[in-house]
Image 1: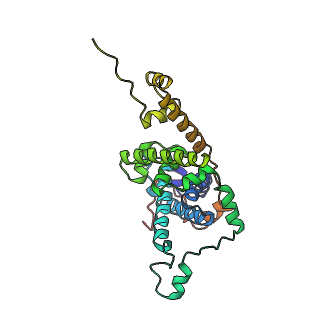
Image 2: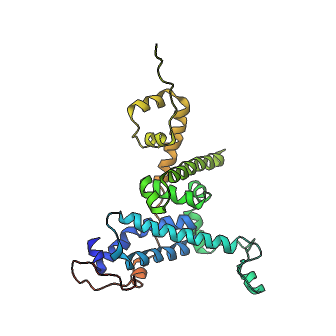
Image 3: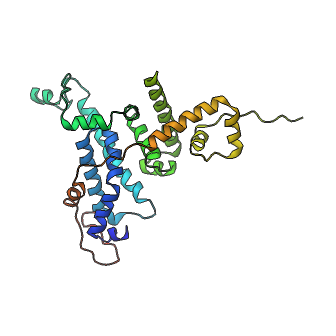
Length: 185
Length: 87
């Protein structure tokens, strides 16, 4: 970390190598789109490395990078919710062409190779169950039980009260168990 | 005459501790005696195992290079921090 803070390129590379999989995995499970997750992961690393001089070593580096990654995912999901929920197109569309371009395409399910890969990677029961969680729950459960952060670290990362984080995680686990048992039934 | 305290079911925090093998022995006894808590705790342990075993996905090959091409790399100038010129 100290080498990275001094601007050593090799240290920057090492940080990206060390965190590319966990950061990409979190983002991929949040947005369920490989190329978008990669764009958001790039955005995350660029933000982190360009601001490395301001990193406060009192906090874990992983907490800082996951905080930025999660914010990127949540921002994207909020924008997507605004833009794509209408069957008639984005509420921001001002012309018929824009409305048509942003409308939900029903029945257009031909899969590209990338979509096939996504279906394979995210097609298991547990992945489906995670995808059905609210984004806030999903972020908390992934940070806690996949990345192994403590409740306190997650509360700091997501800027939420500790009690809220605990509630989200407990509810998420209940929902996951429910989804998984429904599939078996 | 005093009665022993009512056996209290495990809280969600305690269930997580049990699933991780970290529940204090005094509460562990309760899991052994309470079928309801045992079933809940076993289900929780199975879920936590599944979560812990999730795949770590990798981005496309060349990700590090793509990031490095867009990062401003200041020339190392010694042990002191330099302010970010864009900050």
